[in-house]
Amino acid sequence: MDELKIAREEISLADAEIAKLFIKRMKAVEKIAEYKKTHGLPIYDKARELALLSRAGELVDDPEIREFYTVFQENTMAVSRSYQERIMSGMRVAYSGTEGAFAHIASNKLFPTATKLSYPDFSEAYAAVARGECDVAVLPIENSYNGEVGQVADLMFSGTLFVNEITDVAITQDLLCVKGATLDTVKTVVSHPQALGQCRNFIKEHGYKAIEYANTALAAKMVAESGDTALAAIASAEAAEIFGLEVLQRNVNESRMNTTRFAVFSRVENKHMKTEMGVHTVLLFTVRNEAGALAKAIDVIGRHGFNMRSIRSRPMKELLWQYYFYVEAEGNLYTDEGREMMRELMQYCDRLKAVGTYVKGD
Image 1: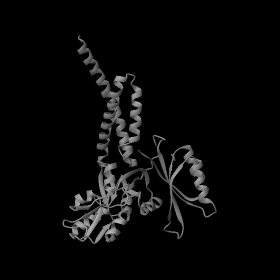
Image 2: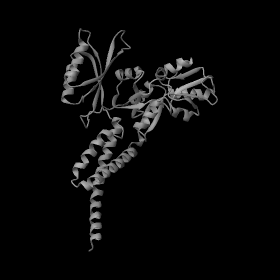
Image 3: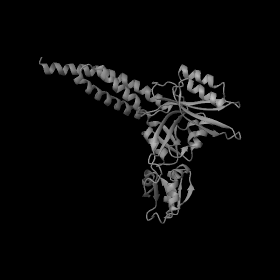
Image 4: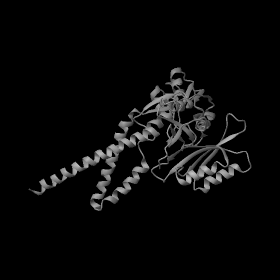
């Protein structure tokens, strides 16, 4: 038997073993996809894939082969993602607005193959998940220029859903008009209050009247239907394409670093984090009406190693001049340290709610 035939037989035997292991791996991928679907987690986990690739090279001693094994692993993970997408293609994602809204763009980024369902406002999208109509809701929680989205924070405080993922989406606000409109013919701009706030200087400089609308994309739709050259919408270029509008001027938002953070809400809490690196916890609480209660609660959070990255207060709707606090901190709530922190916080808090944990990517 010549050497070529022997080598080919060795490859055939190796391929047979690889096929068995591939089936075993893909069965595990099925379980991962179902877990992600249930917990509202995106398919692509950049941090985990980078960690796996960094360890992959350690499994191969031969330096000549090692780099090819890394490529092999990259391709294998790409196949796994494709299989997860097929399994999760029946997933239903709720968002506020319509196609072209930034929430729709964020939903496509997180769940590219899922079915996207539009709802008229944040509360309806949130309620759709709570009722079981949808698997997850993708809602904005904060803008880098215009601050928190208070309505969504209130839903987090009063609702039953959990946050299992937060992602950043770069926001570029454009001025959209019907054909024939110019900067001089426009007299009124319509958009969501957040978008109007992000473009406050542009609106003031041109002397436009600003009218609030439920959603940026819906504002674009209204302008398209009006056919009025005196009316413009502030929305995304995607919305212009969808509704047949022209982009009269790009980047009308003040900050060129304009970014909105979107949270993924689901009915199930993700308690089984696979890593300690980059884990963040979201807490909401009210403090007791006694001197130093807030300072003591903050001290508890820090003493247990949770690095508080954000804290803000919101008025409680049912109690005049009473507030609850929103906190994001680096640290895993579902560890012994996290559980002890929650026990100690109850000494100073009337209400304490863990909204969820997520892994912050690069």
